[in-house]
Image (tube, rainbow, N blue to C red; front, side, top):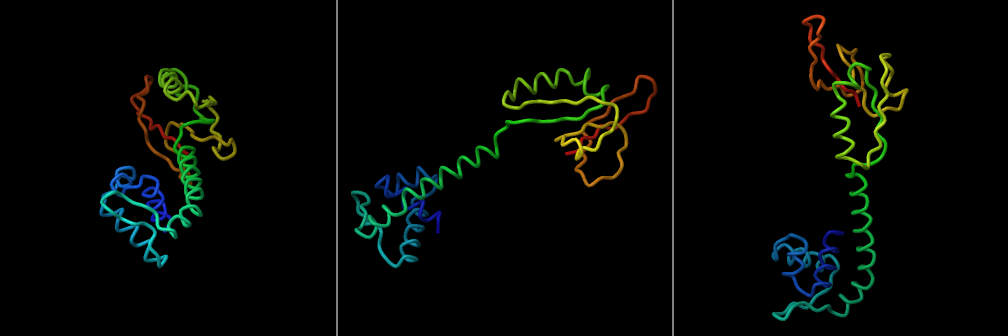
Length: 174
C-alpha cells in the first residue's frame, strides 16, 4: 500500500499520470492501475482524470495533505539508509602475514586507497596467526591450508615459493 501511496503522491505532484510514470520509471498503465487499486482499498476517488491532466478530488486533497509529507520523509530516510549501506567508507582492518601484506601487495594497497578515499585502511602485518574475531578485523589474509572454520574462506590466488616448487593457497576470511 505504501508503494501505491507513493505513486498517488507523485501523480498528484506532477498533475499527470504520464509524468508520474516517467518519474517512477513505470508504464502509464501500471501507474493508473495502482492508483485505482489504492482508491478501491480506500473506498473513494482520489483523482479526477481528464485529457487536461489530473486534479485532486476534495477527499484526494485531504488525503494528499495528510500523507505527502510522511511519504516524502520516508522516501528520504530510505534513500539515506540505502546510501549508507551501499557506500564504501569507514574503517577497514586487515590482518596479513608480513611476507604477503607488504611487498607483493604494496601496489594493490596504494591503488585501493586512491580509489576509495573514504575508507581508512589499517593493515596489521604479523606472522602470528590471530583469530579474526579476537582482533575485530574485517579481513584476514592467510597463506597455506587453513583449519576448518565458521568464517567464510575464499581462495583468491597462489604464490610460487622461490625456495621450493610448492604452491601455497592464499585465503581470506571475513
